[in-house]
Image (tube, rainbow, N blue to C red):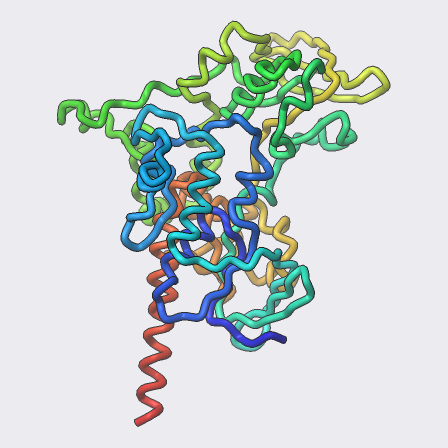
Length: 410
């Protein structure tokens, strides 16, 4: 056993680094575990761009100075708050710069176990070390939650994979690849596959591809801005609410929260991607996946058209750009007994206004709490609210403990 720390942060992506930055001068002892920006480095294809605008792609620090714009100025990279897509490699480099500039020490080792013990938690690391923490912040991303439709789940890995399994789509050059999905991941993966020499087609249940509009000018006349405000997740009053009011979202009826977290900001492509998709390769819209089999000749997919007609397509490989479905049971590093203590909604942890679960001292931030705080938790933009809220809450524990210590000394 290697001592007790006040706070252990599990995860070192945008949410984990942001929480750590807000605890940097809290007076608490903090240890952070994980591989910095791992999801972005290991589960996204080279050549990808972020869908979010530049101003909406910031990690969070207390002074709001360590922004993507600041990083871009320091490193002389192209940047604009609006209208200029952010390359994946720029965002990964920004995360690493943020870690260094904020003075964050991340122990690059994975947590394999978290279990309740006494007045806190015991953590086990993959190198065998154990330690105790009074409070734990789970800040993992979506990598635990990749979703495969049941029709594809039984296929071997050579025949089918999730879109998060690939960083270099050039490996499919010369192959027939079918991409399943209708969102940004499906559309951009297909464009990258096509540009790297694959024979690609998209299959989607949607009747047509939905494209986001061009970003609205921030200096529009006031009346236009009032009619359709621009916010971190897009334009319109509904999107403004999701972007800026996660604390208010928490008070919506449970059924409404669950539905909105799942369906708001649904599958759509960024406007800058449109020219790389339309007319470049086949898009079979209005086709639902019915069955899939693999064999010596590759993969065959059975599709049901919206008209009820049936058809088949063949491929050498299928990429499922079918998103992520947060599920507490898939966070297997949390002890089974601990998971049993955490109350859930739609299989995700219920958290209070400070992101604390029903297990005292256990906090969860990020996509795993979208049914509580809203769809903003699925995006980097939500990191600011989460980090500031959790940072304030945990800093108060340090203040209280200091007051108790002073009182005991009198």
